[in-house]
Image (cartoon, rainbow, N blue to C red; front, side):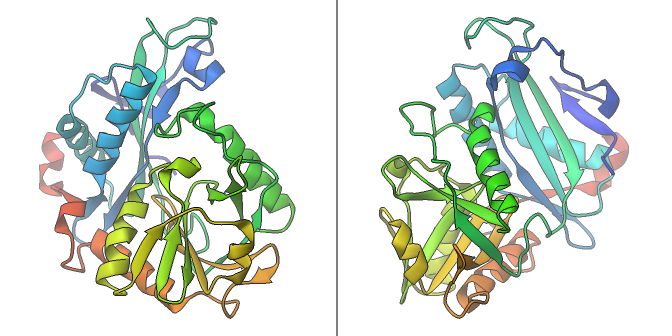
Length: 310
């Protein structure tokens, strides 16, 4: 089921009216940027996780692409909260802000074209990817280098490589793909960042290894320190290190925190979900629902009492 209302260029419209022309530049060439924001229902309130961080990143992506995003971060957060209220959401959900070039032109360019902003919302539980553990394979598809595509921006067209990698993994009997960069170092999964543990130290690829600077990734930097009392080191990771790791996890907005139980049919750790990963998974979910007092700045409460005014 899809919720009935969508925010489009400053107005709330019916889902069926939120249409984009088949001649839109963004539809043909992937000229756009997007975000994903989790919203959680705790039985009495809705909480948006890291909404401010996501809209700050969307502003950065727009600047990189040369787009004008005509709303402040706070205006976007407020519009998202109003969208939750207007749709009377009372379950875990996912917001998808999307800024694409809607001008009808077949010319390949990004300048002098009008961007179109929409925010849609859809139900999303905890089954986007199996939270009990995933089997990964190293993909034959490589992560696009920043020289070819701006990896500091979350670009719509940039997801064809991860989509190909994900399909390859599923067709080969795995659950998820891990992509290497053009230098042969581990970059990320199809839509998730990766952390690898050896002993009491976690390693994650640095930004210059062509990863997206994930927001959940940044949250895990804090939680690994605060919850596990272990440290995180950013450095390049070789493929063979995946096979020898004590523990591996994937993290992202949709995935949250997910254990990796095998890579290329080699068991990770004992071949089951790592206890540290499960601890981080539980903690982040509790923070998202405001059932853990840590990091209240990560969440924004949606005041559902204002529904009748939305």
